[in-house]
Length: 432
Image (cartoon, rainbow, N blue to C red):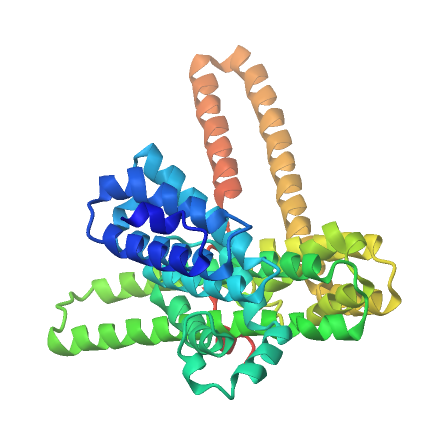
């Protein structure tokens, strides 16, 4: 009875037919869903000539199936992986659709799947940021404010804005992987906005997608999640220490303190401001020629106003930012943008001096090692000449002396710690 309803020429009948089919699919097992239901619903949701209500009903049904059968996105089955990848591709197409109703439906579905942990995709998350800050949807909201019943319906822009307001901080705090995905969404957000501008170089077009507010919101959300995580870890540590005090020996505290101090000196966390600045500079370096001048100017202004603590950030990331900014200066012709990048270059001059200082120390160490090797060679030659008169015992002793000097040289080369950075630091800790 459902197949005639899905293939009916009446759009209302098709819509109710798809709704009944989706409810029936919820009662089926995973194998039946993969073989029969998901391919059919994907076909219906992908049809461009279909009306919005029918496509939305099919997309919502697919979302429910993925949430119920969580093994679909974690299965090793090729068919399950293929259907899930097709659904993600469909969501990307719907999020960039020209019809606002389809975009709103896809955004709500994407938020549900991200929060449920079905996938962690920076590009999908960047699409949600672009939709959230799109001022054209605000005009649609004002038209729907008079209808109070429409606000609670799926596909309403007011409902979507309320959901996304809660979704972004909740998702960022849900897991470390989610917070990393949030930070990784800066680069695709810039690319999506540039593509939507489509060469429009007008203040009105720039105001529709306020890129400065978007990047600032991403960084603040990431920092808030980091702060909550640190506070949660501190509370757990205090609770464990108060309930069950740990037994320590006399020599253990000093060793633990030394270990902790070594970890603090060898591990430097990168701030969200620095990571976002690297993404901005990389875009200016690669795609500034294909972006509107006002957009390039806005990104350069964000870089110039970024608060980066050069003394406490990782040198490798700072040098990466410095190289990107230098390359961007060669590819940009806009004078206000170049003036803004010049401020960043002046800020990063200290990084160059510090790197040069370290290189000078390395050169001094190398020169000292060369002098030691020359002295060892002279000593060996002298001992070899003396061994002709004294005997083989002195020659063996000279070999041990030479080996000892080589060991001391290798020890010098191995001295000195390295800086590693795989985690972020909170803006509250760096910028204050």
